[in-house]
Length: 181
Ligand SMILES: Cc1cc2nc3c(=O)[nH]c(=O)nc-3n(C[C@H](O)[C@H](O)[C@H](O)COP(=O)(O)O)c2cc1C
Image (cartoon, rainbow, N blue to C red):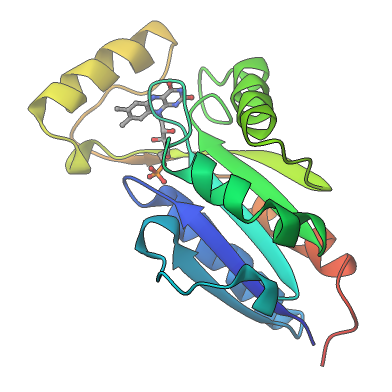
């Protein structure tokens, strides 16, 4: 059985939800798995205590959160010396008006910036959570999403994550670990 940490950076909660589904899937496969918000790490956090590490982050205004870059750089040795993976969450990654090339570019730019080449890197569609946005953000998102041909009814939220793809990603990761329980 391997002990896996899924470290995530989420603003409105969808990346956290995806991290939790990955953890659940790994647990079903017989491993120990837990999630941790990257902005809530303790000073004595030691990534080398885990057998495998997964990092996930969402895109806002064309970028993954800046605070994640120094963290990944700091933990690069641990990431490169055990099974590791990265996932990126965005509206470009799935849903109406998805732009897979843009989603891939966000992911590639981030990995280049931090100098990490994970064995596995994936893009997932995120969510439009109008109920969580303030007035300005809601208007901005209606304009941006509207131009891309997406959903603009602000009376509800939309989720575009392909959960089967998230489970496939988790299953592929599990195959690179030692034998389960
Ligand atoms: C203010 C704002 C800016 C965003 N900018 C982008 C963007 O530039 N490209 C993109 O593909 N998705 C963009 N998104 C969509 C988010 O990536 C998507 O909502 C994702 O589910 C957020 O994940 P989180 O809830 O874990 O933060 C943006 C969302 C918001 C609210």
